[in-house]
Length: 494
Ligand code: ADP
Ligand code: MG
Image 1 (cartoon, rainbow, N blue to C red):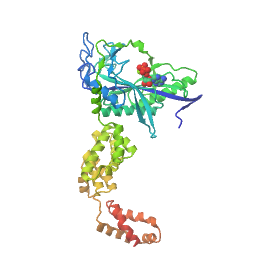
Image 2 (cartoon, rainbow, N blue to C red):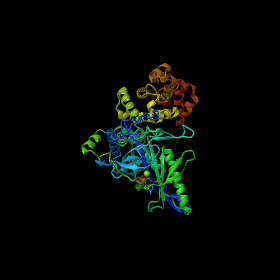
Image 3 (cartoon, helix red, strand yellow):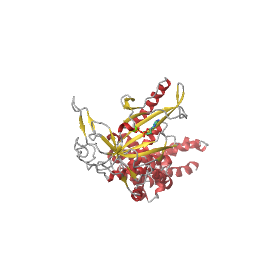
Image 4 (spheres, rainbow, N blue to C red):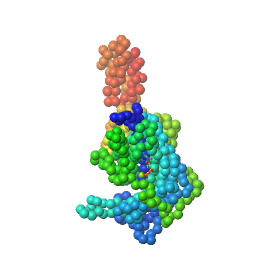
């Protein structure tokens, strides 16, 4: 498939760069001790610093620095041992300081590259320009009073990491994969909760189009897009709009736009400000930020296992397929559930993890994820605990129940929350492996189907499956199919 888009006058290429704002996971704000907890009553988490009372001075919160460095490490970026906080001056009704403390020329994290995997299995490398720390603003509330606007300063001064990509993405799919990967990384590192519906992560989406191989075109920047689906809609809409504009002989304006989720369209907000409009200058209240390489090394040493490494380990040590491993590591909670399950299952069955990992992975991905999707619950709220899941699989591994019966038991577990051993016991679902009992049933089936036995012996091999099916039916699916096969063959051939 061509990566170019066919227009009326020839091919076009879309170019995308993302600025992702991720709220730092930290109890307190970037320069004050006020709480960052979500959902509090308006203006209950506002210190004199957050509300910019005269004479108040910002004091850096070391936890936010640590988290920014750890995020940079998770993304494989360069860490700058010296960075500078600047004032970005602009008027905003919900920003009492009259400026935002941000980082301009010298950010805390520098360049890096990140590899993302696309749906067709191919990979794509996307450059990261920088990550800098900055303050969030408050929130204007226009819907509380018919003629007045209220302001909630709880978010004012909360630490944000702005992660800026290079203009390296060439489709909505690539942008989606990149965003998802960053979200996965910050959640693994525990540096941002990634809750997009609470505004913890949002993106400014820069889009331009050009003729293949030409210079970069003029971009539009759509602000504050708060879901991956919306981001992909923005890219598709902007691509179409810009191509149509250019093909009609018009020009793309460099401007800031906003997205309307109800129509799936973007509209102009204002023409683009340039950096000099903000009169950036180093904040005289804050010293340049300096730390040692030892400090960074110590943080690096204590990073948790990240998704790429986890995926490689699942494939290499556990023999899980590439695809299944990718699915399992995409969310840390899923990987944790799977690993917990495997430990339990291995303990219960005495089997080596690598021998049972594929079966466990298939059960988690197909059965459990399917069930969770139906009840719209996250895995952390799974109606089937790790322990019960492991019990169910152990019953299969040791041959107590067949795969067929396991599906029924699972359905009952979802409904009742009972443990599988109890369900199997209560409902008498144990697999019949007793050769004597199965032999009796085989004899009955053969006696009742003499005509088919003749046909089979006359060369109609395919009838073998029919006989297996009849025996299974007689046992309501409880006969061990392997035992049935072993006993049936000699009797038929007999
Ligand atoms: P700002 O928006 O703050 O003025 P930058 O120049 O840092 O900032 O660019 C912001 C984002 O825009 C980056 O992610 C960059 O990759 C992207 N970008 C820059 N030029 C283009 C372009 N021509 N088309 C698409 N994206 C672009
Ligand atoms: Mg920008």
